[in-house]
Length: 244
Image 1 (cartoon, rainbow, N blue to C red):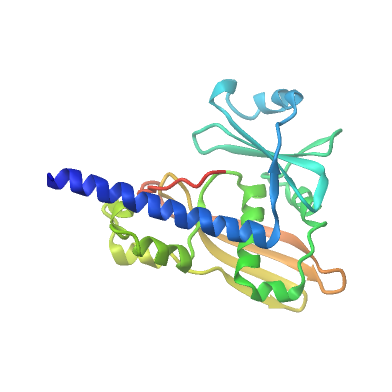
Image 2 (tube, helix red, strand yellow):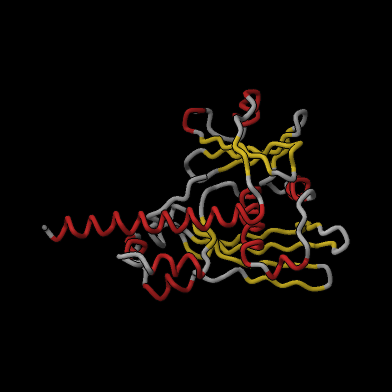
């Protein structure tokens, strides 16, 4: 069999294995804490979006979801395919944007029904699930949190990390350095999480999310979100784009 064909088949197998690993991990996280149901977005939302995104409605990707602890509201994520996203919260009569300067109160409105005891900060899966929800409410654009678990899964595939290095000839050690588990600090009813997030365009951002928690009612609140780009677009090649 020609070497090029062998390499191609190995790449396909590698991608399939990684896809299986990522989908399995996502299932575990969702099952652990917060199953979601996808619904159709309200038709009257379009006029809210025309002033924010491009008028070409057919280029938009619209995803709507409900959280099992927040049944009275619907969260709608709209992306224009160029990396710009709008995340909206509707309670049936009002519409609020969550991924903007004044969005934190609306994010906390969604989170206030979530039970999250202090002990969950010691649970890797619970923390990852919480951070995924905060990211989806604040950013909305697809991507993945770069954890050591995912890196180990990638390294176990036939081609290992090689497909990811086809973007800008990324140094393997530099690539591995971005895969760190979220650093979570908890003290005096305050919490802070620092983690890296990879986007499909090959860029990497560092997120710092700070908040408060109440031991009595087991509720959490986000007080600040800081996102810094640490690797520019094309730093790596993203062979897998997880499904929404």
